[in-house]
Image (cartoon, helix red, strand yellow):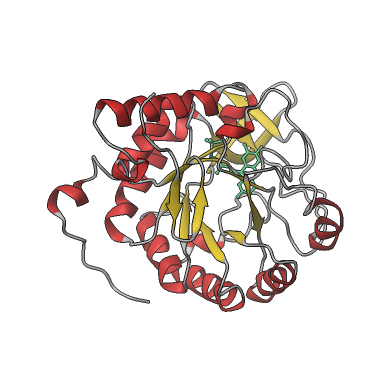
Length: 314
Ligand SMILES: Cc1cc2nc3c(=O)[nH]c(=O)nc-3n(C[C@H](O)[C@H](O)[C@H](O)COP(=O)(O)O)c2cc1C
């Protein structure tokens, strides 16, 4: 291989590769997944933490579909105090950044979570504004741009010197509206997308499984979210949704992602990080590009016209 570099800087967040394990996949990063080549990972996002412990939803919580899976884990987690006591420090994988994911039902809750993490010197926080499984009666925060702005602003005021990632939901008419609201609120990076609302019918048990769809089925939705959002915001994007091959990751980068998150694919392909690194390096070589950042948004309309679409500030 040549001198191509997969190192990437997303604002202040420097990663040795653009590959991020998405939230909810590797618990808190404390489990050593023997088969995985950690050298290929840039960061791991921990399972979303809430103020109080959550038992999550009753089984079944995972349901396979022809091109992905529906999960309705329901944010099972031990709560912030137990997380800090038992998980936070064991989550340190050498040379892989830890990103702590939090979620709350009110601004006060997310502020409290952030205060506790800042006291422990956590450097990168992902604010999950898009969990579809917690309270099915209520909207997710990121289904409303005003709420998105309020939550992000409140958190950023507390973690000024830290990196704040806002993770937004695809279950909206126009994801760029919430993306812009998060940027205006002070987010340093955006993660998009989380799962799409879906159901499965269990004919044997006569039940309905309601949760979030992930995996290959949602890749085109995630790609469009990244493509459209890249045209409107100035902050870097982490593209997530259905990345199963190196080619998928490359498509996200060319659409406008600076880094990519992998979720469901890690359930079945332990070599995916190696494959992504290989595909991206070959692409850079063939196109005489030195850095991965040169490939970000290469096929996005924004880089053809150079024009940013007009926008309304929050
Ligand atoms: C079993 C499972 C648990 C998840 N838990 C979380 C979570 O706690 N917080 C979060 O922000 N996203 C969670 N997600 C969503 C993923 O981080 C990711 O956004 C989504 O699965 C789309 O990526 P994929 O198609 O590569 O799986 C979860 C996904 C799965 C499959």
